[in-house]
Length: 177
Image (cartoon, rainbow, N blue to C red; front, side, top):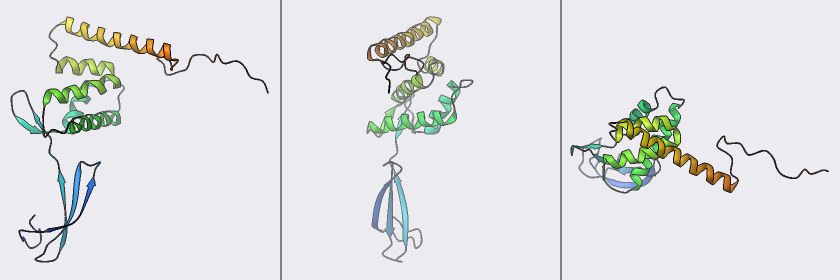
C-alpha cells in the first residue's frame, strides 16, 4: 500500500480490525520511509450479474429504491424498508460468493417483503416475475391466502396469539387470595 504522505510504495500493517459487522477491515499502517501512520479500509465487493450479462456492484440503495416503489402509498415506514434492505444484503453476502445473479437478489427480497406488506410484495413480485395476465396475479394471491390459512391453523393448534396479535380470552381458572 502506497503511503499517502511520501508516496513510498510500501507500508507495514500495525493493526487490523473488523468493522461494520465484518463487512469492512480497517488497517492501521506505518510507512517505513517517513514514519507516518495512516488508516486504510478494505471492503469485499459483491458483484451482481444482471440478465444481460453486465456486472455491477451490489447496491443497498437500489434495493431500497425498488422496495420503496412497491411500498408507495402503503403504511410502511422508511426504517422498515432500510431494515429489509440490510437483511437482504446480509442474506446475499452470507452466500459467500463474489458474484451473484440478480435473480438471487430478487429472491432474497421477496420473502422479507411478503412479511412486511403483502400488497407491496404483490407489486414487487408482479414486476420481478413479469406477470402478464390476471391469472398470474390470481395465482400469487391464492398462494398468499394458502400461506395465511396455514399460519392460522398452526397458531390455533399451538395456542399462539391469533392473527391480530392478541391472545384468546383468558381461559385460566380464577384464583382467589
